[in-house]
Amino acid sequence: MQFKEVVGQEIIKKNLIQGVKSQRVSHAQLFCGGEGSGGLALAVAYAQYLNCENPGDQDSCGTCNSCNKYQKLIHPDLHFSYPAIGAQILSTTFIEDWRAAFFENPYLNALQWVQRIGTENKQANITAAETHEIIRKLSLKMFEGPYKVLIMWLPEYLGKDGNVLLKLIEEPTDDTILLFVTENRDRILSTIQSRTQIVQLGILSEEEITEGLITRYQLPEVQAATIAKIADGNFNTAVSLMGEVENNFHEVFRDWMLACVKGQMGVVMGQIEEMNSMGRIQLKNLLSYGLYVMRACMLYNNGVYESLIANTSDKEFISKFARFIHPKNMYSFASEFNDAIYHIERNANPKITLLNLSLQVEKLFKIPAA
Ligand SMILES: [Zn+2]
Image (tube, rainbow, N blue to C red):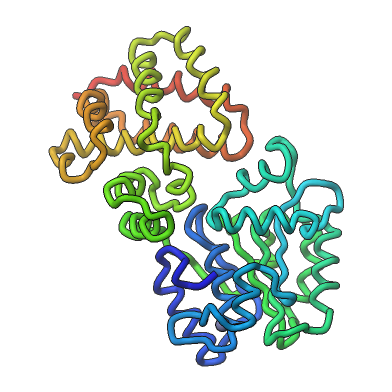
């Protein structure tokens, strides 16, 4: 993967390249950024650049022997570690799935990965056996070089066993680079945090997401711009929303909200069954769509709507729904939806989450505007 394939993050790309050019490459780095900001993609592009035989001022060459292997993720000095399912399981067990998942969407989240290799209710981990395997692999002689690179995706899945890596992090050999990619810095071992150089990613702008959808997926500009508004800085959400935006999210959402406004909890219970059958990933997208609708309603109420919302089927819905959303309830709406997304991502029971959300929403609709 080359830097040019990574969406946005231009300042960080520049800094990383500058570091290589001036031979100031830290041997243990922690890439921090929320889901969909591109930490994994960036780490792979950076590793490819570090090993490129003809690195340019802005990117790896993409054609040398090393780049060729990097682009297929088969370079013998490139190692990956990521959450996997099974006691004492090694990441390499799932390497074929891993490569396929990365090529499909390098912005994927943990839930999508776990669903791919098992069932969503199984707990994924980076096991003690895996940490020992990392030490063993990195102690091997280099095959091609110039660097042996370990990219660990989501060190937050590392238990206390992760501390066996500290010596490696503190005293890596000159030819070893460790890149940790986290979505949640607060949840990783403090011992690892304190021994790594932090690379803080920014939240992607709407323009960057629009541009990324157009170049990566050849999406028409209008559709890309609509998705970028809903995605809220998360390119993974944007990718999974493709094809959904023209779909029936607004119908499902409209019917649900209407039942909540009327307090028809019997109807809501049936809707919850249907929404639950969508699966967690789509459910999360539906809730993200709900957040987008809330924001759009506020824009509509403030008369700045026309220029900002591109999609016509949404327009009609939002123009009717906007009267239910006002400054007295909108922040609570947003925080209830955000909480629900948080719970869905973390394996909470979707039906209970949706029921709680529906009850809260019903209450919020009753708050008078003035
Ligand atoms: Zn190259």
